[in-house]
Amino acid sequence: MKIALLSDIHANLPALQACLAHARAHGADQLAFLGDMVGYGGQPAQVLDLIMAEVERGAWAIQGNHDAMALHPPPHPSTMGEEGAAWTHQQLSSAHLDFLRQLPVQQIYGSLLLVHASAYEPAAWHYISDNVQAERSIHAAHALNDGIRYIFCGHVHQQSLYYHTPTAKLMRFVPQPGVTIPVPQHRHWLAIVGSCGQPRDGDTRAMYALYDEALATLTFHRVDYDCAAAAAAVRTTPLPEFFALRLELGQ
Image (cartoon, rainbow, N blue to C red; front, side):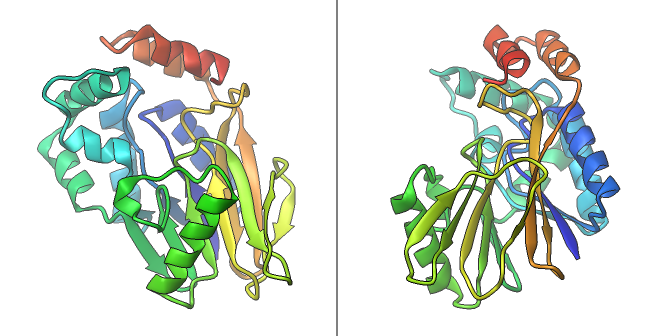
């Protein structure tokens, strides 16, 4: 089985469509959505319509912090993100809201753990920004189920891979797009798959990762998409101009 891992779509329909097309062209036969399907972007209902249809066909999905905030936006928004959550909530139907509400914050599939942020207090949305946070997530996953060998997550909007060496030292690896990485099951791995809909590393291309279960390999991808169309969709809404600019700049 080849599993396409997509996170932080952030209501960016062109990026989602481009990554799904790329994943299918590369043999993906299972989709996994790792949260933050909405927030920031201009097409939350359309993105959820597409994801909900994929889940009906067997895709996996978990909840992210922006999904949770869209369910219960702050009554008095004080940040751009909170303003976006309030607007997003108004765009969603009861079916969309019910879908987001029933999503788990983490899910185990065999030796895989899917979580949006960290396996350590998953609903607290901790950022995995260094080895300490990565180790904490790995330990929490093993306490949950010692058969877990792979943790797949997003939240950070960049791509990276943490793993234990034969001496049990935790290492961080920055992957190159399109380069296949062996990830054998005798080690423990934590992969941050990056953001499909809101890259923040100066590169506008969308991100996702493809895990080949049979070969025990992981490939991180960058995918060209129509970021101008995504920015234009934001500009048709009351959302802050900054949300459109960051798509055009990859920041």
